[in-house]
Length: 517
Image (cartoon, rainbow, N blue to C red; front, side, top):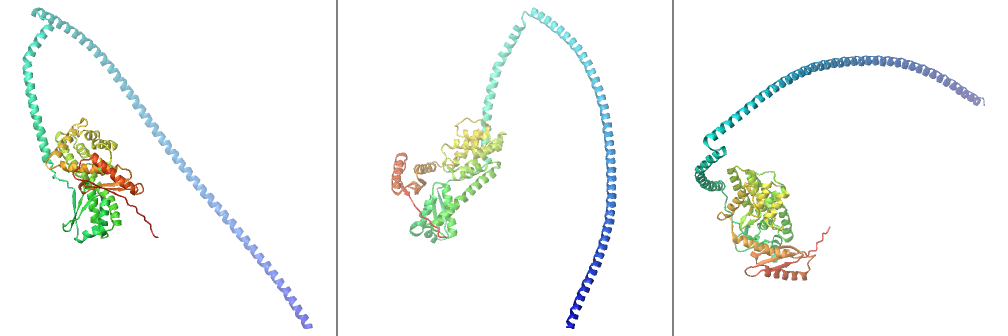
């Protein structure tokens, strides 16, 4: 029992001692922290005081520097003001001297003017005396001769007129004859020299194109199963495919050079590709039509480069390129226009006219032919409208309007282009009248079909012996297609003159297309 009490007392004593020790330790640590804080505060005050002194010193230095700078600027401004004042004083002195000189000059001029007035009065008096003396002498002469001044002048002029009339008339007659001979000779020399300077190949336009094949087996692939490929090619391109015994070749026949060219490229692409079926044919044909536009622009740019012409609107360049696929009595319209431009340019240079404008007018004189099958009106009216639309030179516009004599030529260049047009058209081998009539007949045949409602495209084929009309299936029914064929046949019989018979075929095709995804 005593041991337990002793243990408890020892524990209590230990707790009390621990508490006292802890209190003392905390008190010592607090005093130490207080001393440390006081030292830190003291050091901070000292540092702050030092920083304050440094800032004050820097501020004083900066203020002194600003003051010095300001004083320097003030001195410079005063110097500038002083210099400016000196310059003003010098200028004022110069102005005063100039005023004095001007005043002296005015005084001198006034003195000279007075002198001139005095001299003028003396001259007038002398002239009056001379006139009076002349009048007295004239009266004396009239009295001596018995003729008045007017009568004497009339007699002298009569004698001169009688003696010179015959000589003048003979001189004029002689010079007129010489002038006519010289004009005829010069014009002939100029035309001959122009034609000698420009020589162009004679190109005869054909209506067929030959396509070479890698082998005769390709003919069967082009024909296709039951002829479906050849029918598709003829339907989309509008040309006749002539496949005969000619080895490794087929013939494309059409009066339209553009159709033949598109068909040729389409077939050659199909041959290289190897896949020949209706869907592929239509795909290649669509792509070829898009590529053909770039080729047309290239033809136009080449023509401009050949003639050395610049600053031509892109739309006109495309129209120029389209002339490559147009013909006039069998003569290629683009080559004809280039030939006219060269001849007109050479003749303009011979006469001292503007060669560039002459070439431009010659190249554009038949520009209306590029779209005369698309727009109503003559190629002259269409061409003039195009030139006005794109703000061509007035000389060029008048040349287009007058090259066939529809209006009067207002410039020498317009006359030169008309002459060059005639030279290009009438040279041997340039044109073929029968081919132009043939093309005109086929064009009228297609126009009759295109006038019908619901027609998509129409092609004259087999040299005009067949008219193939493709209609829009959503607008024309099967029953209406039969009536359309009969209507077209009746119009052809009434409006056209043609040898033999013409077969009218109306094609209506409906396609149902779905895509599995």
